[in-house]
Image 1 (cartoon, rainbow, N blue to C red):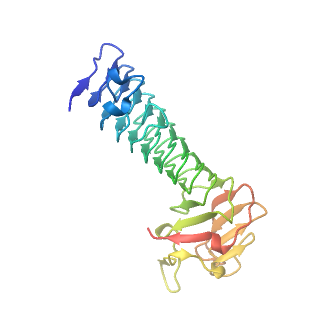
Image 2: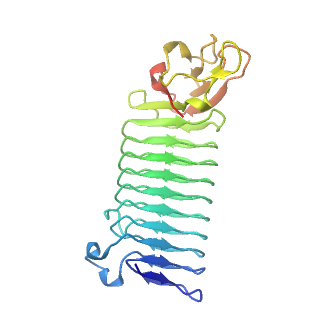
Length: 288
């Protein structure tokens, strides 16, 4: 495998079916040879590793499983030259306010630091925003979107998607398909769910982050699976000791209460802005 490095004294345009390194300047890096431009990319594409380092870089993968690392600066990373190029790509933004496009294939996109925009596009993709106020779009396929820290916007688009806001006050839109809104911890912040549907969507909570008060002392875990009808209350507050999930449809507020009608305060975890209908069968507990 050839290793190609740019020079720090100019903005570079690098081509190669290889391992390419940019510089502290603003580089444009292609994961295919310049002789392949215009047609026949499949004949030249390999499994490339592209490194941007400093500067505001523009990086293109090829038609195989490429790895792109933006580094410092406000970078734009493409898994392929267009949305139809295949390959299961691995894109890491680094620091800065970056734009990442997965293209076709089952891609993994990491925003890391900065206010980033991540587009999975076609395929079953994994998107993680990291720190900063990020925008994540799954595109087609069954995608897994995790906002990370700060106030993020997640859109599942087409397919059966899983959306996790993470810490902060996030906005979650599932799109079409059968989708899951997942909450890891009850203290992560109040997320806004814009398009919840009892028919097609599910709210899941991670077992370790939503423990309830035990009968004698300490907290205990809820059973994995759909909660029971006795653990759900439709109204403004819990009325029984096992009303752990409370949904106020008049406001769209969804609460968790570790001891139901006991002395512990209920904690709001989400707002359903469309004030959709909800029942106990829409909420499940997952291991973790």
